[in-house]
Length: 342
Image (cartoon, rainbow, N blue to C red):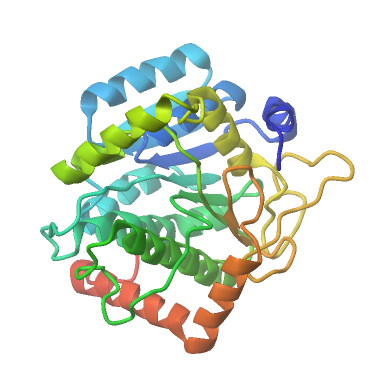
């Protein structure tokens, strides 16, 4: 377990260990984990240029003002967009590419508990947000990530360690009604996508993580019965335990994931590694079971999720499922946008 003390010490070294002017893109950052992490990143980085994407202009204006108060030398730009639509994702990425030549960090937190809805692009709404939209952001911005001489990292926050079986005949989960099954398939698809991307871009580090229980607005778009049940459970359990990770700790731990050398690229190299580890600290183990292999499934304590996930992913590779998932994603990109990436 990475202690909170070690997290805070590493984050405090960002300004001295990493260059000024880091460019960070946060998607799904007008509430919850994205917001907490963005504010912590703004606090520690030197003269950062931050772009954050969300649906609420009111929340965007508030967060931009908070960032400016935390770090007057930084820039914080809000981009309003519904990222469940790949056409909107492309528009956001074009906007960022028109202003920046490099990106150091891409941080993704979009999600929903709403099942059954279809987007205007004929994708299952949760799959659009969790699988296709997130991957589209990565492939669109990957050239900018690979171009930077310093930190190169993608963090996708969902359910690392909760990976489960995947139905290759229903990758979007149209026929899944059990939330735990949906969670397992979605988590596996996120991890497989990052594993495939790490092979394509060994000079970029890719992390799928589980944040623990954090107070967010993800149930806002969920089904009424599910929201009611979750509300009752939270009240009952909350009477006996501290249900949620404190917001400031959540933000700090995710900034650590985004900047620490504990999660190096597959290619290696000090320049892209991040904030140096203290003497004797080990790098994380990748989803292939090898230390520092570039694609990581990380638990709420900052450590690799372990042999169970590694074995599951190894089975997916043997079955050709990683290729199947990637081919489906590429096919949807071409169907909807007419091209593999912008």
